[in-house]
Image (cartoon, rainbow, N blue to C red):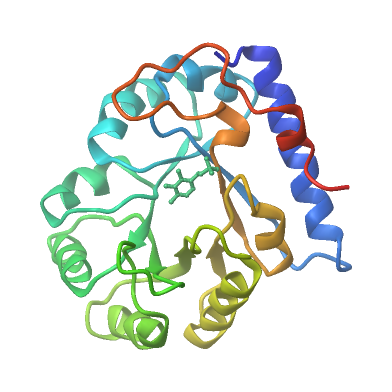
Length: 245
Ligand SMILES: *Cc1c(COP(=O)(O)O)cnc(C)c1O
């Protein structure tokens, strides 16, 4: 497991890589927020990162977040929790109560369900529209060609404030062009937040204008396969932490 010292060290290494990427093409336009993706890791694997000062985390399942985070929130101030996995409409109430940001608004029905709760008086989390940037059938998200119109509809018809866009580019292809496309859609849709980039490609995402990067395994180590407990010695290898120079 990642202990206090190496949690701080990993955060420092990733923060330095973020800074370096931001500055690569001259004065950086904005801060980049590190979302530490703690999905599958138990609370005691998260505590060292909280102790080292990290406050923004991502989880991909409502049930899992509900089991882990209320207690962590009671012990640490200023936690900001992002939902980065698919949200079923029957879990919307739970998600509103648990999360500060929902990054996966990916369909009309979900927009309507969120709008419904807002009408009933709920204060909604900040919202990002997920774009299926590589048009992959197995991935969630709005088609890139419909994304600008979807954002406009969320605002005008559902009365939702849309803060940003999120995407997960296809595996095994250079991610840069997909990130550039998301940035283009963001400009057209009038959003300022772009959540893009994971452990393997967050520097590329920052060069293309990411304001949020979602980094899991480079901080927490390799995720165990589902339903297996994390093993103690699965941290990132040195070369994964160093990145390019
Ligand atoms: C798991 C996950 C991440 C983190 O991936 P790593 O490669 O471990 O950094 C980022 N975004 C989403 C949507 C995820 O599901």
